[in-house]
Image (cartoon, rainbow, N blue to C red; front, side, top):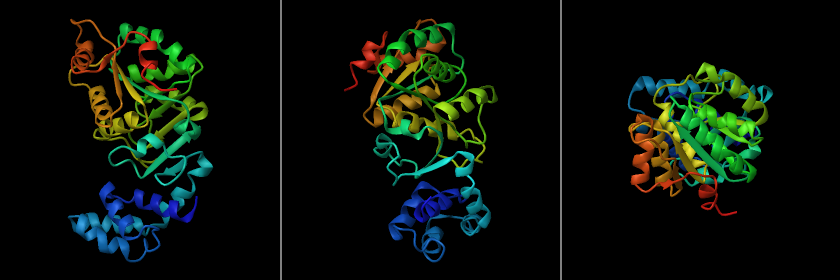
Amino acid sequence: MNEFNMRLTHLHHCRGMSWKMIYYILKTDPELKFLYNDAPRQIMPQLITTQEALSNALQDLHSDRIQEQIRQYSPNGIKTITIFDEEYPVLLKETYQPPWVLYARGDTRLLNSGVHLAVVGSRQATEYGEKAIQSIFPKLIDRGVIIVSGLAAGIDAIAHKEAIKNKGKTIGVIAGGLFHIYPQANQKLAYEMMKNHLVISEYPPDTRPSRWQFPMRNRIISGISRGTLIIQAKSKSGSLITANYAVQEGREVFAVPGNIFSPFSCGTNELIQQGAKLVKSAEEILEEFPY
């Protein structure tokens, strides 16, 4: 890791450090030459409202423990990718406030190869949702589409597993850090993906997942993908947040229609009413992607 990346990653680890703070620090000191001297002291007091928060941020900025922690990532198979690196996903750079740093474990070449399709849906997937994935995925995988999802229970896990089963590639985007896979039931799947596919997070590896991080990570799932496919979702589902991010970034949104009497189809059917493309087959997705 070069010196600039080390400094940016260290800054990213500081408690209370927001996207906007890092932006203003980089604007003042683009090469972070003065990170451990003047720049943060000039910027932070203007952006951090309490003395305690300011003290925590400055304490972390001068922490040898954090620097040593970052040095241990590489020996443990964790790669840090900053927004200034070639490996950073090109599509993600086009989104609103893209993460300054991604933490990755697995094949990082997947970030910028092939066409990515986000696949999300209910955590309480039914047999209908699983069959829809089993029907649609083989031709997508055969055309080299990389499946992106959130390693959550239900549709997410089924999507990752079906991609692997069909000898395709898949990327998991998690809330929290790489050392804290949630839910525990998907830990085995996550470790398999870290070995042969890819798992990424915008949070330092030792970050425990918090509720607010789940909707936030949805912007990365859609952000690295050409389109988003929603399979089963309730009216107020987190999957609809992913779809909204996709719409805001001008990406394709696809939805599998469902039974009008099932609560697990309300969200997808509403998306179709709002203009999402109704899909029943892989071909209806593939025709929207330029090859």
